[in-house]
Length: 294
Image (cartoon, rainbow, N blue to C red; front, top):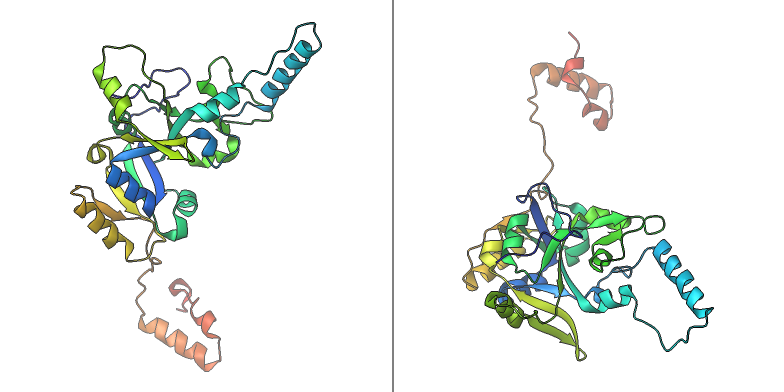
């Protein structure tokens, strides 16, 4: 089985081997590894209050249409649920960043208290880890003040975001979690039944979707800002769970790259002469071998 990548509302990358990243704090990593599942939060609990929203022009058009109905002779018996309201309370998503290199911005945002991690994988591995219950594609970033999208398909509401979030380069997995229609595909029915509901206050706010962790994850990368105890701790956690996943430091971690500049006798003479004349130390450090007197 694999996720659905054929839907018109889900743009696909040029290469299915494109690198993807999921940045998170340590508690989320622990949940991922222990439960061996990906967490799909309900859209309405995401940080961006505009998730699943119509654009300004689309909202205005809907308002004008409503005014015509109110001003007509038709009897009003209630209020229909808007597409935005339906999507926000019915759809669950799981998000990744598609980018070859690490993102300093995402390390800062999602690596809480600097002790963050990122799991890295490939687009194809994510698709192959999921089921036909899931749709996968790349987010379209638009200007919600001027641009529009087709509203005849509810998936468009969830696959568009404001341009201010374009730095995320988001790949989104979407699940409209409903009982599968009558099907002979027992694997699909089994995948639905194995999904675990995460509840808060008696309401489903997320899904834990089982996956093959080792098939999905290429490695776990430790934040460049993490304290030095974190790599060993994560390594022990992975080993204790019997998982064969590599743990690596971020390539962003390091010290300044210092050039090796040998001091010749000519350098020494220039520096000594300068010191006798009282030249400041910071000026001495700027002496360039190419500018030495012949």
